[in-house]
Every structure is written in C-alpha cells, then in structure tokens.
Image (cartoon, rainbow, N blue to C red; front, side):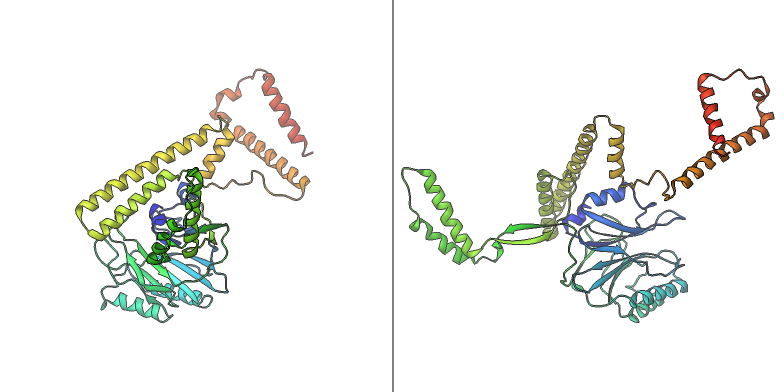
Length: 422
C-alpha cells in the first residue's frame, strides 16, 4: 500500500491475491489507507485470485457480465462511472497452467460479452503467455483474438524477473497514454514487476467525500518579474523606528501584495481520501525522505545511492510498524476492558461484517412457533439418541438420584416448552 501512495495510484489490477474470503485483515488494511477492493477468490484451491483496488472516493462497482462456467482463467470486472455518460470497464485477468484451446474459446466469449456493453474497456493482468516471442503460435492466437475486438497491447518490455513479457495491458479506445507506460523493474515486491500507466484526462464522477483547499500556483511564477517587484518593496516600505512590530507587519503586507499579483490565492475542490489513522506528520516527512532517496538512486544508478535508499526504506518501514503498534495499543486500552467495545475494534480492523443475530420475519407468531418447534425437535433427537445408545452408558440404567434445584429448573423449563406445542 505504501507503493500505491507513493505513486498516487487511482486504480490497480492485482493478480495472485491468495485471498480466501471476502473480508479479512488484508482487506481491512487496504481500506485503512483510503482504498477499497473488489475481488474474486478460489473456493476449491489455494493461490490465485484477482482484485481491483481503487481509491475510495471513486464511483466504482462490481460488474456481472453473465458469463458462466469459465474455468481456464480467473477474472474480476468493475465499472467506473464518470461525470458524463462515459463508463469505463476494468477487467483483471489471471491465467496459469498449460495454454489450451479452451482458454481462447472462453476469452472470446468474455470479450464478446463486454464489447456489447462498454465502449471503454481496460484489460490487465498476468496472462502467462510470452508475447515477446512474436512467432509463437500462442502469441499469434492471443493477438488475433484481442485485435478482433479492437484491443491493442501497451506493454512492450520484460515484466518478470526471469525475463519475458507475461503481464499485459490492453485498451480498446486509446484511453491509455502509451507513452506513460512504465515497468518498475527496480523493485523486488514480487517476481512480477509493477506496471504503471496513465489514462488520458477525463472527469470521474463526484467523490464520496470532497474538501476545498486554498493554494497558490507558485510553479507558474515568472521568477525574474517576481524578483524585480520584490526589489522595489524596500523603497515603498515605511519604517517605524519606534515600533518594530508595525514595521514587520508592513513588510509582510507589502510582500504578500506582490505575491498576490504574481500568484493569487485560488480555491478548488478535491477528492478527500482517508489515510491510515496512525499516519502522522512525522511519518509523512519520513516518506518524503524515502521518496527523495529513491528518485536520486533511479537518476544516478549508483550503488551508494541504492544502499542509502534501502537504509531509509528500512527505517520508514520500522517507523510504520511502531506507529501501528502504538496506535492499536492505545485504541484497545481506551476501551477500559469493555469486551464488546474491544470486539468492535477487532471486527473493524479485520473488516468483518456483523450478521444479524436473528432471522428476519414479518409474522411474530410464526417466528415464535418456528423457534418453539426447533427446540422441541432438538429435545426429541436427544431423547431418541439416549434411548438408542443406552447400552453404551451403564450409568443411565442405574437408579437416579432426585435432581438438584438447578436440574429441576431445567426440567420444568423443558416441560413447559414441550407443552407449548399442545
């Protein structure tokens, strides 16, 4: 998730998630960074899994293409709504194992289904086909299948640490700016390199949360003209020898007036994305240092700069771990031993959705009757099992002592419950 924040990722297509349920501590961690996730996982085996992770402020929802019985690959599809009538379909695909005719048949079925509904489609994922081998039959078949639906492939270089272009990115409407496609082969996040690309500018639908910010466009200032106007400030400044505070205030006002001329204060509304609650100013400064060290290493390619970046990265990760531990410890301690409140904290951090404890029912008398019948049948089964297995429990055949008060209460309650049926 740190990589997502460092590169300001809006939408990410992820393969091999290895998730085994819809909500757990992994999905909770993703949401704590201001992102959300839609994913599909394997029910019958380990590994695999596809996901689309996106900023929580974007208008994104899962899509069902009504394509059943696809077994040769896994996929996740989402729809992102824009302010206009424009809708973008993102499809994350993961294929593994031998390449068969079934894969191309099912891929063709999927492409036909989505092409009928969406004009803007972006497909990305791990196809596990070495498309750098231009004469290979599988490469040719894949290219023809995608080309028949108007898709072009945007990744041209190796995407795996052992070589080979396995991770592909397709676009059917020139939405992706091909010049911005970048393979980050300097990172050891996985044996597959992360790929970053930018789309051409378009306006997304209104974010769930927005805020107004005030800023100055300092980068567009004409520095020579600004310096010239600043040099005239002392000539216009009235110095009060008896009151230093008035003089400083006058200087501040004069400089601000010049700055307002060259870079006036402006306001704009931006999407507000929540960050992790342990994410404070100290950690933000540490991440800035790491980003600077990373850029320096990528620019110089020197081993000394690489070692310095790795050291800063280790320090940043250690700080993040320490701040998380401190934050959760304080949060649990603040509950003062309240078990229910602590469970609420744990459920939230584990992204657990609490289910309704009782079934929904409009007819209360029917609910009471079903509730009563459940226990009646339960008691019957217990008695039948005791009778059938009495020979296995010799103690049951011995004379029994009168029940204690607690046992008697239990027997009375059971008897009353059975009588409700009559």
